[in-house]
Structures are given as C-alpha cells and as structure tokens.
Length: 160
Image (cartoon, rainbow, N blue to C red; front, top):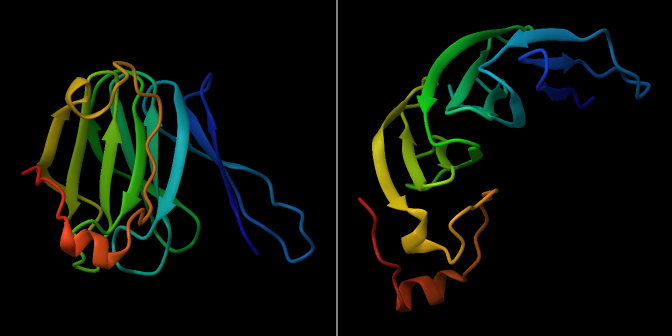
C-alpha cells in the first residue's frame, strides 16, 4: 500500500496521505516545511526502514523530515542552498547510508549521510557553470549511468 507525499507550495507543508489496501487514501496529515516546497523525495535516512522525506523548498533551503514509524514526521536539519534547489538521494560512497545531492542556480552539492538523518559537510561543491553547460540547472537525479568496467577503466574526476 503505497502512501503519497505531496508538496503544497502555498501552505508551506507536505501533505502525507496514507494508502489503503483498496487503492484509496486516508485523510491528509500536513507536515511543516520551509517556504514554498515543490519537490519531495523519500528514502530511509536513519536506518530504521521507515522512509524519511527530503523537501526542496523554492527559497534557499532543503528540509529533512524524519519518519517516526507511525506516519508522523519530525523536523530534521535544514540545509542551506541556492534558490530553487532540486534534490536526489543515493548511496554515493557505498557505505549503506543514503547521501544527498542538491543543485540550485549556482552550485551542485553532495553531502554524505551520517545514517541518523543528518549529513556531513559538503563533500562536493561545484559551481554549475563548471560542470554543466547551462547556468540555470533545474533538476537532478541519480542512477548508475556507466558500467562498472567502464568506471574502473576511466575513473571520473573526484570532487572533495
């Protein structure tokens, strides 16, 4: 039974709708975020098997919301960023904990997860004009885009 998390920009909340077995949803529960949330990604940031939420807010902050297991969320850290961030979660350093990548108008940032819903200092902070042709990136995503043999043969430049 999948649940839904919906960013509600005007009211500055994420509405969580718990799924029922028949494909319907329970009444929404609103969780406060930063100003003007517009993107939500889910992933287990604390190692407790419950999906936590990471919210990109239009104005300079990424909010982390920690799931307590009952479907309620508590405020985690707020991460300062450029205007209009986009977020993605992945285990970039292969330590079993989710890390975060976010990009705004000026910088791509990767921060390694501590496994408790917090993140270390910036592991990678690259002006987007150096790493992408556009000066106004609007989205980020993660995937394994190369084969392991290609990555081994031609390692990418490190950003640390």
